Structure formats: C-alpha cells, structure tokens
Length: 573
Image 1 (tube, rainbow, N blue to C red):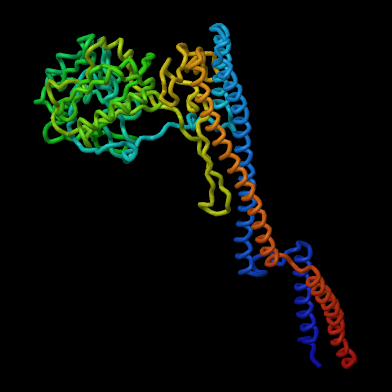
Image 2: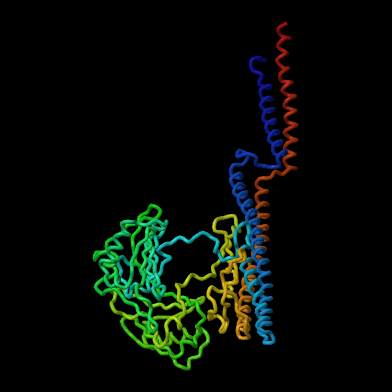
C-alpha cells in the first residue's frame, strides 16, 4: 500500500474531468441549439456553413431588392396609367375638334385644354420619382455624359484638312476628351449664315478654361494666313475662349452665297499647326491627351411654317466633291410633308451622283444634309452646298437655326436579383414626356413628317409641368385637317405608352417569378445549412444525460479513492 500516489483517485479525477467537459459541451449545444458553436466543434463544417450563410443572406437581400424593383415598376406604371387617361381625353378632344360643326371659337377652347393636358403629361414625366430618382424623363435628369474618343464618329487624324470649311456656315465645338482619351477637335458645320449672323467656335479644356497662348496663336494665324476668311468675316476671340466669325455681307434675296478661304491654305496652315502637323498638348483631369480632327455634317431646323408644296418649281444648285448639278422639283410637285420632299431630293441625289451621293433626312423636325468630307485642301470659289434661285431666300426657307438634340432617351435601372456578382436584371423606361411622344414640339407649325398634315400651334403654350413658362408647341386642332391628323399622332402616342406599360408589366411578372425562385433557393439552402450546423436535440440530450451521470459517478468514486489511504493509519498504531 502506498500513500504518495493515489492512482485510483487520480484515475477517478481524470475521468470526472472528461465527463464534466463532455457534459459542458452538451450543455453549450443544447442551450444554443447549434452543433457548431466554434471552429473547434467542426472546422470544415464551420467553413461550409458560413459560405452557405452568406448565400442565404444574399438571396434574402436579393428578394428584398426584387420587391423594391417591383415597387419602382409599379410607380412608373401607375403614372403611365394617368398618361394613358390624358391621351384618351386628348384623342376625344381632337375627334370633337375635327367636326366642322365647331366654329373657331369652339376650337380655341378645345385647344386650351389640349395645351393643358400636354403640359400635364410633361409634369408626370418630369416629376414621377422613386426614391428621388426621376424615372419617366428618359434619364434627362442624370449626370452629364463624359466625352471619349469612342463616342465620336468619323475617322480621327492629326492635322487633317477639311474641304468646304468657310466663314459663313461654320458652327463648331472644340471639345476636350476625358482623361486617358484622345483630345478631339470636332468640326460640325451646322448652320447657314443669313443677314450677317454670327457663328461661334468654342475652344476649351473641358473645365471651362482656355489657353491664352493658344487663343492668341489661333487668332493671328486666322487673320494673317487666311486673307479670304478675313475679307468675309470679322474675327474675334473672347476671354472665355469663344472664337466668333461675323459675316460682313448680308445674304442676298436670290442665292445663298458662301465664300471660301483660299485654296493655298489648308486646315493645318489655317490653325497654325504647320506642315509637320505639330502637336498641341492639352490635359484633361491632369492627364495629357493628343489633338485630332473629326469631320461632321450640316444640320438645320426650320422654325417657320413651310410646306413641301412651296418648293415646287424651285431650282437647287448642289456642289458635291467637285461635281455641280442643278436639281429642279417639278411644278406639279404637291407633297404636303417634308418627308415627301426628302424622298424627292434623295432620288435626285442618287440619279445625279450615284453611290457617292449626299443624303438628306428628317429627324424630329430637323432637316439634315450629310456629305462625306474629304481631306483635301480647302477650296476657293466653291458655291454653297445648296443654293436656291427663283425666289426670295428668306421667304422660301424662313429662319434656319442650328438644330438641337432631340428628346427620347431611356432611364435604365439594374436590380441585383441574385447573391453573386453579375446576377442582375435591367429595366429600361423610355422618355414618356410629350415631346418624346411627339404630341408637342419645339418648332411652331412644323410638319414633323410623322403624320402627314399634323402641325403644331404658333405659340408656346406647353410647359414642363413645373413652371408656368411655355417651352413647347402643342398639337394644332384649329381645323378639320389638323385635328384629324392630330388624332393619328395621339393614336401613335397611346400605342407608345401602351408598349411601355406592357414592358413594365412584363418586368413585374418576371420579378415576381424571381422572388418565388429566390424564396425556394433560400429555403433549400437554409435546410442544407441547418443539417450541418444545427444540433439534434434528442441525441445531444442523451449524450448530456450519460455524461452527467458519469460525472456524478466519477465524483463518488473519487471520494472513495481518497478514503483508501486512511487504512495506513491503522498500521501505524
């Protein structure tokens, strides 16, 4: 018998410690309901279950995202429901006005309601928001679009020359590209100069600042190196970097005459780049960019009420790539729309110039004449692109101004409908304001070519819906013909809104199915995660009971083992 080491007590103590620890772990699992409470419980299981938890939470958030998407779609669709109601009322009014039992006073009152209803459609488009985002204005309220070389058209080449550059039809923007992109000099001949009109060329660095050295050099080269240009125009460069050309000679009554600069001066010499095409280094957001030249096209917009039949019997002299041809519309030409006129011209262009022909088109009320611009030297004594004889120019053409960009953009929203990258869904909502629906315009009396005979009124009575200032012209219903054509225009608008509402309905239905699928996926993944992480309460309770009993038994045996050395005292007596 020994007393220094009570091995029975030590063994009972060790077993009691293990049983107590096992009972403690069982108590932890039973109290949390989880099989894995820390990495030590199941290292691999913890890693797998945490990935599953991330997926589950992502799926649940995607479900909420989809529900928010449905709310946005419903907001847009609800607003368009009212737009539909307004268009139906406008169609009813146009139908009423088309009846000649109405006198002019009656139609004036109908026109007033047409104006107000058109303004209300604008208000709906301009003010319908979801979470402060305007969703029916075609993205017009979004941030400005950054320029880049990929957004330009045509071929870019440093020091290129442009055929037909002249003082009286040049309206150009010199625009800086964004950082890391090519600096572009955009030549876009847009407007005719009539009766001493002033044209402007803006040179800037994209932030509203200009280079004084460049401004001085450019001005000196234009005055000294282009005598013909100096003879036909006053040239001035303002402190803001605006280079202005003012025609000294008013337009004549019979012919739109344009004088060109001397053939000895190419575009490089004109701007002082030199024959070696010297590089002008500029910066955008601190990054150096290079200069380049891109060609453009002529765009004008008719702001007077001129019908195509007014052009019957007129002769047009066209200069295109060195070839001059006269085009005369037949005296019996009686087309009522500019669209028919455009067709007449393009047929004549094809017959005269073949495949390498200029083209005339009409888009949103703008007449656009486009011709490929060669890179030869600037020519001298060339007639204007289109000259008109036989009538007073101003009476025939009215007031031509540079065309402006049209409406009709798209609001785009992307919904994250999955738990992983790239699992998104995009919706597009078109511009639903009156001009995009073609029931208002920016030009009085212009036949837009969309519906033959449809006209706009002569005064700006349509507002944007948020102010009382008229900015657009409403459909004219002052006569049977105008009102009848307006019915077709409004029909087209109704179909446009119907198509958009149909798309919104499809979006909503898809999102509802998305939500159902996300719910199923989340449920199944939660079940899988539960099997890994949750504890089997019955099994764990069985283990706890066993360990608890064993712990108590070990405790009793430890007490017995501690009593065994007491027998040694009997031997010592």
